[in-house]
Image (cartoon, rainbow, N blue to C red; front, side):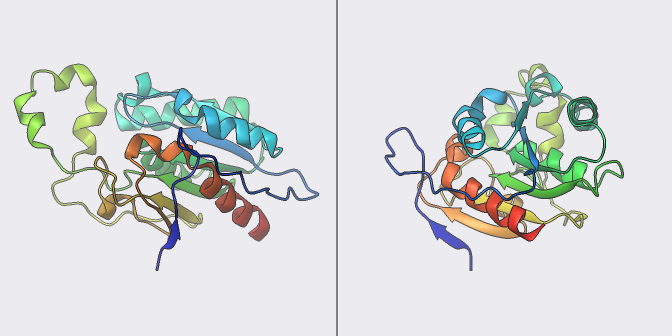
Length: 217
């Protein structure tokens, strides 16, 4: 059964952030990956909370706002991680939408398998998304949006090759962008009445998951 949770940190929310105890050893850094046609700004609220709790956050911009070929997106993110987090430093990946799929691929990357202590997907398109009817009507516009849109479409999604990295997913039944068959992997936390674009604002749920990852490492 998924964890049931009410929406948190939406514009009209007055909920207090649940304090997270930072362990004596340095906590892992947090790499944040946005979705398609998006950018690091979607994590503004979450980054503030991460800093407040003592975590170093790295909200990355990659792949021409997440529209480039998926393999190029992975290489772009990998290059930035090597530059900003050199050595063997461990880190947690938080991925919204396409960012969850990029995180899943990084968790299988031989350079990062032993360094990623957890992957948190927020409405993550782990298995892609179904084709939408309006895509056919706007087929002349889609090439301008980049290859990622085409590559994300899955008519018959296949089970992913899962890494050893612990996977956590924050999902919403009202997500109209990424369906549950794509976003539900690993340990599930369900939030009610949170649309897809607001999932990066679920600070309470994300911080709780980070605390669980840190506690178990």
